[in-house]
Length: 181
Image (cartoon, rainbow, N blue to C red; front, side, top):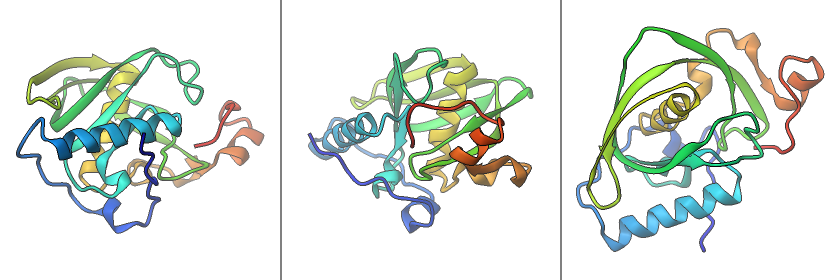
């Protein structure tokens, strides 16, 4: 079990585009993916992108059955997604509060497409091709943004809707959560 340090906003690795993965099912790729799962689980995350642990490759992981950070969220299937492509299937967007392991203690109201199609590959190079909605779609978009060097505050339309979780809870703008990012 290897838990990596999650880089925080301002780290150069989080600000640059990631490179495509060229070879699948290699010892290096498999170790990266295992390190990502170990790190995400240790942090109670819903997802993690390779740049968040300092590796600028197009690899994201996500999924959970129950998550203490997202108590009302529906289950999202555990997925390794490599070299992803996302296409919105509707112009409808939803504004929801998001957090990120790279911005501990912060929350922001972020618009995301509600219905998307995504495709990419698993760790063995097998095609993943899904159409999803709701929270699942939000998680995929959030994690894949990391691969382009984008953090969720860059998507916020009104910076008055961004702040520390505790202050947002005290002002009744978001619900109290049992744990921090």
